[in-house]
Length: 362
Ligand SMILES: NC(=O)c1ccc[n+]([C@@H]2O[C@H](COP(=O)([O-])OP(=O)(O)OC[C@H]3O[C@@H](n4cnc5c(N)ncnc54)[C@H](O)[C@@H]3O)[C@@H](O)[C@H]2O)c1
Image 1 (cartoon, rainbow, N blue to C red):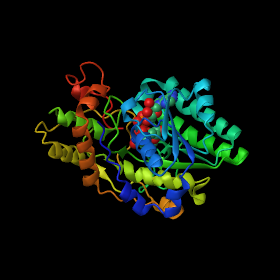
Image 2 (tube, rainbow, N blue to C red; image 1 turned 90 degrees about the vertical axis):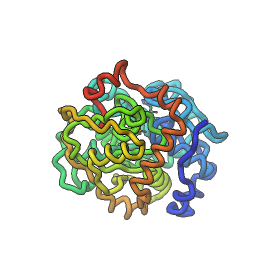
Image 3 (cartoon, rainbow, N blue to C red; image 1 turned 180 degrees about the vertical axis):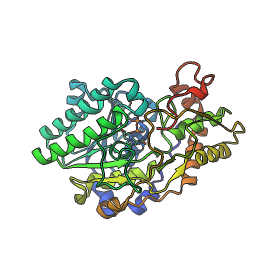
């Protein structure tokens, strides 16, 4: 039985009444709606009265992670499959959240063509359908780590962009933004391009290509040392998924968001070593940490988003303290441990080869 940690009261408190009401009786398509962020977004949209169509091929997600609600329709399928696209657009969605993606950096280094197909062609297909069906809004899940490169000054501001990206994923996520801009200017598609920063929270299943927080919690709960790539001094801007979902709900209906890109981060930096120590403390793990070589593509020593533009354009205000978000996430692991352990996607023998694991920190 899944436990819901999505704090609807908190979200409703910050979301303007207009935004909440705006979803009532809308049909909303969420590609990637079974995933870490998409499943939380789907639950929130359904809670605000939307009819939600989820299109997901379950390549990095589990069916049980999709909220089982009367106003959520799950369609298992690929964003590259015309038949499935026709099926979901037959439902006439007026708002599209395009979250399906080949995730993430190390996966794209290992499988660059697959990354280009899903993140490049997949996004192009969705935008074409958005033109043909005349949608009211197309929200694209962009990525802070994919736009700013490693030379941008902190805090990361929307004006800066880099042509020197370190992985195929970063290139194709930027490509998605560029396609959004083309479809906006040429066809008038009302696109919005929120840039996410290291999302974490209930709903993210650990695995070889997943983010650092679910993987640390997973290994900690197994009593293993937490594998840190590099020296642990690197920082990330960890954003609690409910705060990110709040920003996405605003991005989906506020007029001021159309055509804009803005950071949805927490505006705070946390060192990876501090994260590991906190997770070991929260889970009672005595095994400590171990260090392995920094990955060649991992060239960003610090990440911290400037969120002034998101505050100005959509009134975004992340509200969850990091320790509260981490506790909620650990609790979600405890409540769903059997399903999570069965679903965790690590290669065979991963725990024996723990210090050699290639993808603990996105
Ligand atoms: N999680 C982060 O920290 C982060 C940061 C920046 C950007 N993003 C972006 O946000 C979006 C959601 O990220 P997430 O963390 O929820 O990732 P996720 O992997 O949990 O979710 C992506 C979902 O897309 C599905 N999917 C993958 N390929 C597909 C395909 N070809 N057809 C249909 N479905 C497919 C997967 O099964 C998964 O459920 C992605 O676009 C990602 O690039 C995430």
